[in-house]
Length: 416
Image (cartoon, rainbow, N blue to C red):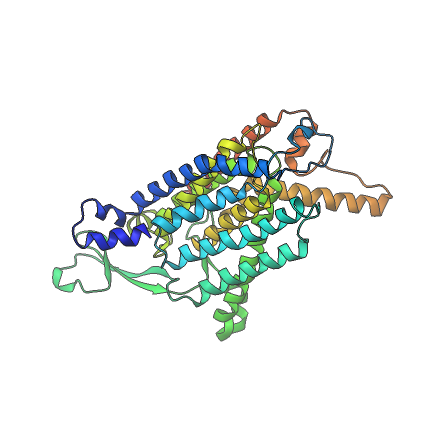
């Protein structure tokens, strides 16, 4: 909203209005605004939740300090949602298809998480929203994202057709990109299902390769495969974030690290000069996503102020499902979804530990009559709690690992 207002004022040479054209300025403003909302208004929301006795009902698992958290306000994810949506509406380009998708993702999964928390806290149903409805919601979002990326004419990748050296001014025509003073790159915007493979030279992979045996129908079939992958990724990452939200500050801090990395990748992928220099996929219009990610980073850091040990508020499914979905959809848009197992390694290991624990328990129970466990408890962070590690130490070490994984993810831009 402010973005369009100042663009209009810039036409009349209004002092300072021109800075709103710069993504870097608007990104900084979304970070600041989301921090203000989450830290100042967040306190009021926490007090409101406490007044309404919207507290966490803790199931006794025998973990140290666990029962002390009973009654801590939950549904704090509304703080995160407000801190993301409001700054984006103020400073983002709301006509950008990618920004629209991110807002839809935030509201869609935030609503599903809110319903789950509402059923648990107000209706006193510990099971919350039935799992099948969560999955249906995640599949629905995956379909919306996948089909939008397929149908929208704005979703393209710009590829260099050929380069020409020592070009004269007479040869420079409309529709070409000038890389140097005497080098012109002739480009073409294409609609395709290409993505990026980490650590691989010429690291572009096209989903069409998976269905190339279909011949002339392979291109349309590739989009079907792509949409299926989108559904799987959205479901996996949102559930992974949900499982990680078990210790004070763990999911919030990890998400802030992941969000910062994705913001860097989006800025580079959406900038023609940097994309050309790094020899990575250039995706027009994705630079605007940095404005949205600025709000995401500010929201998670601001929420961490109250969610760090000992937590004054829990995000609940309202926050965990939405931040996981945001990360998944954002990575898909900038064609970095194959980087998720590395970048979101904390989420991945938390989910994997649950899958391994349940699968091994069922296998041993069927084979030997008594179920055995790999971990003392799952998800993985509870395993270390059972081993006697203090909660703050577990969170800090997981976040250090998260930072290391983030650095590795950025390094993939050059190491192939």
